[in-house]
Length: 183
Image 1 (cartoon, one colour):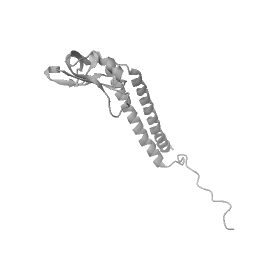
Image 2: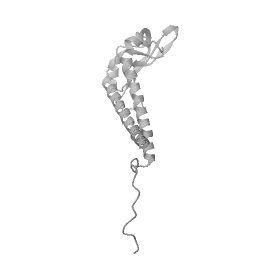
Image 3: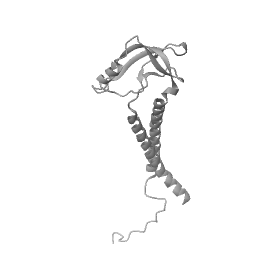
Image 4: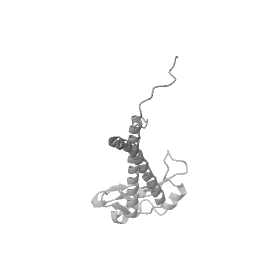
C-alpha cells in the first residue's frame, strides 16, 4: 500500500492549549491596555469638565475685566454652518495683566446666528466680570452658562464602555495565563 489508512494517533492536547497562538494573546493584552487607557483618559477629562462646570462658584472668583475683541469666528476645518465665539478680554489678577479668550465652558460649534445673539450685549471697551480660577489665573471665562452637559455625560459613558472593553481584552490572556499556572 502506498499510504497508511490509519494515521498515527496524535498526542492528546493539554488542557491549557486551546490552539490559539501566544501572539494573539499578547495582542489582546496590548490592545486592552491601549483601549482601557484611552477610555480612562477620556473619562478623566469629562469628569474634570463636569466638576468645573458644577463647582465654578467655588473654583472661580469674579474679577473686573475689559473686552478687547468680540465677534464670531469660523474654523477652516469646520463645516460652513459651524461657528465659535471669538472674544478677547484683559483682567488683572494679583496686579498682573492677563488676557482671556474663553467666552464660556461651552466650546461647541453652533450656527452663526446663535453666537451673534449670545454676544449681542458685549461691546469693545465694556467692563465685564470675568470668572478667574483661584488656582491658575490664566484660566478664565466670561459666562458661566453651559448648555451641553448631555453631550459630556454621553461621552463619559462611552469612555466607561471603552474602559470595560479594554479590561475585558486584558482579562482574556490573563485568565489563560492564570489557568496555565494552576494546571
